[in-house]
Image (tube, rainbow, N blue to C red; front, side, top):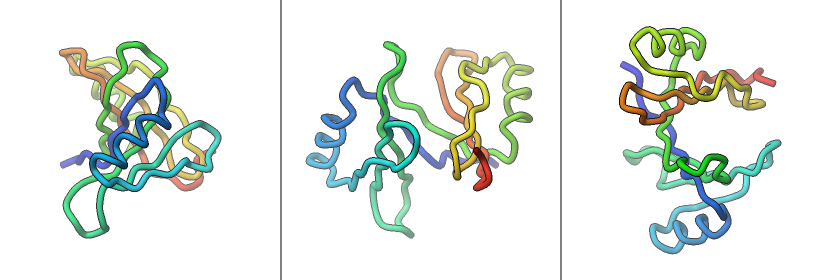
Amino acid sequence: MLRVVHFEINADDPERAAKFYQEIFGWKIKKWEGPIDYWLVTTGPEGQPGINGGIMKRMNPQASTYNTVDVPSVDELSKKITEHGGKVVVPKTAVPGVGYVAYCADTEGNVFGIMQEDATAK
């Protein structure tokens, strides 16, 4: 069974959104040192149930919050998703030092991410 391991909140002003979530929920949020503007969100201590996530600049007016599922292969799951009536809306992309991600839509138009861990991704 594949699990949700990450969430992403899209924001017009990611710094404003980070401040909001820090003040409301006490989340720890810090800017990622990677090649894109991305803020890492820690929602609680290791060992406590829950997931961590990120805040990113909204690139699409309809973008909201995405859940990301850990998968063994982005390529295989992308194929399976399209075979079952879904769509790949953002193809496989490398996240340097993290892995590969793609964004897909289910049969109802809901967007979600799939992530394949691979520390060698460039």
